[in-house]
Length: 208
Image 1 (cartoon, rainbow, N blue to C red):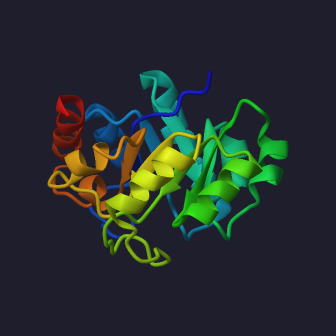
Image 2 (cartoon, helix red, strand yellow; image 1 turned 90 degrees about the vertical axis):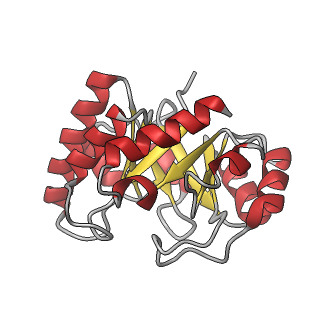
């Protein structure tokens, strides 16, 4: 059975430059994240593979799941556990052919139609959002809110990972929508102490 984590942290070196992807992954795992998603929009493919290999080795050692955002080629090269694909990214069915049945493939959705498409195309989970307004993703659509999130959870027979504007202040409300888990970028990666930030979110998730 595929291991779809409940606490996904996306690494980012565009919104912040204090920490590297590898450092952020280490902090997040130490703080309780069970899934690391490597998210890098620029740079050379060689450089991305080099960084991804380091994170993959760390995740393998600690038991965390390692997902590469967008780049199927990088995921193949570093033997990642899977990929996460946006609506305009690499097609999910083709990614499945290249990565195999054992790979974890997540798909992004911002409405019910997109979430249903992810399911039909063979995604293993849906990253749904943004639930709240967010400045972390340039291509993020309007905030969906908790009502639509709950509808997605009830309608789509896949693990739903909520993303977008999730903070320590609202994570409990998000979890009450009965999502499988959450994904965050700035709430961990952009904090002065990413490890403590991850630990605080993890504590809230466990106490909910």
